[in-house]
Length: 426
Image 1: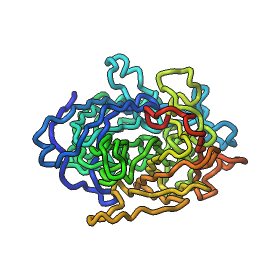
Image 2 (image 1 turned 120 degrees about the vertical axis):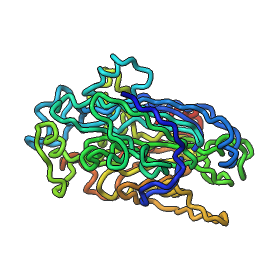
Image 3 (image 1 turned 45 degrees about the vertical axis):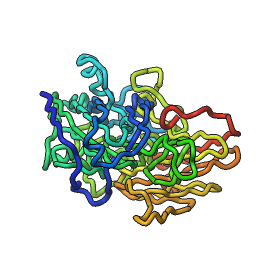
């Protein structure tokens, strides 16, 4: 049964950790690809926006379980890792979301047991009318579990609890059922989404993803930019202009908990002891592998981890890094020899009402659990740079030797090396 409800989320959220709503070019991620739609030319007032027709965006996500692969060479941790139940070439049990937009009912049902981590990137325009249908396909490995699933946009301002995804206040989607969520984002920024049903477990198991809301200011002449470019926020002066953008979902993975979920056992979450530290569902060196497609088995062991964390850019370009943390530990993402400018925290532009900017220039960006950061840097001369967690104990894979974990590369080429970016993280 599908429940379609039409309402506009404009009231306060139950959360105080993050603030804001959401911004401009709309897109949906298929596997590791985000397809951007044309951007509006001006930013009307909220009152004016309410009187005009809003672009209609529709997506369809499915929640299920599946198997993924941690970096090769990680030491075994019997019986937890690798999991003996995992089909070749995988080694770790997960829950996750899949983008099933446009699929037939038969094709959607076939995605059961094929979860993706991190979840598909969702990108929309400010003032879009967005309908996302969530289908609960159930758990192939654990048919004895009747866990519901929900969509919670972390930090997003909802008008009523029904669309907030908190099962105690709204609805959880039972196995075999659908629920349609409605959103109308008013404020640009970087947000995240996750399942809020038994959220400690479901978030750790992989049901986490990014939400990008693009500002109405996009492609309009602003401040010192007479042509009009891409912006992270409605800054009024062009200070959040960027040429390329890359998203990073920061999470940890506790192999013992994933094993226990697959083997009908219970975890004591107070014993939380992560084995792997991930960017977009991958640990280094898998983080630098290209984007994949969860619908193509040719992707091999990274088939269901399709989002790359490799940053590519040309010298002199402005690069936007969108970082969100849905792990349970603090992370400090760092780059040596490149100045990082933090322009927003938790979807709030760091600018006062009088127009004074409070941007922070640093080499290390702290991102706590449930938080997001928007960071811009100007690409230096050609070369290879590392983006990594300053907590060095998070730079291994399962305690093994060599580099691993929460690290990726920034590749800077001479001007003209890389063509214009058309999709996020590519």
